[in-house]
Image 1 (cartoon, rainbow, N blue to C red):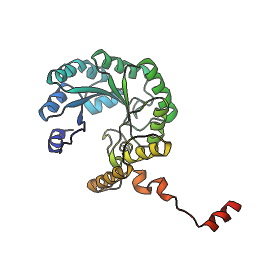
Image 2 (cartoon, helix red, strand yellow):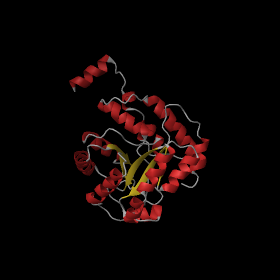
Image 3 (cartoon, rainbow, N blue to C red):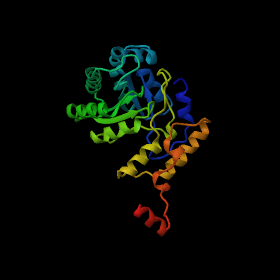
Image 4 (cartoon, rainbow, N blue to C red):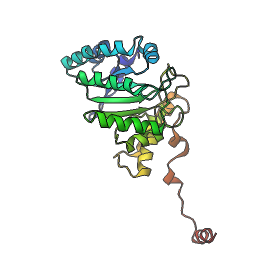
Length: 258
């Protein structure tokens, strides 16, 4: 975004937190260096139409610039990872051929990028598809450090994360209160809410080391800052375990008899 540099400069940095910026090319690396960013995520869309709308170039043109971006990042001593938007489908192309996604993965690997995110910016992914694609990607590319990035446009974000977990993925992007969204996607919604993801893990017995109550506090603050309601289920309904209340002994007995 045009003012990302100024936003980054204004952040009060906390020790132990990794701050990274999404970039499209070597110019993005230069901007990141100038504002003190220590890690960047190089992005390209698997959809030709989306890449043209977002970056004014085809995916092939973006891929051609990978090496220059990596070389500049290494020269400056900053980390670089990669991401693939529309990996699960796009409003313009519907299904994205898996070969197109794999070609981009191969391009990242060819320039030494091993940390790669598969992104569903359009919110079109569905669980069986996610499981199938993720299983195949882990099989063919065991050397990749994978991330998944789901938008909750059609309410399937949490289900898609669970499918990714079942396929062996363990790293997921999310946003407090579920804010975000791509301006080029029809009906765009934000990322899966961080508090919803942590709640899923707690209910499923998955240890995260994250304090859900603190996460919810941050989510509420974010909702106040943006000044409108968000797509966070947990901020709307609360934690499941908070709904459980002890009933009087007699009432429990009567319900059991029924």
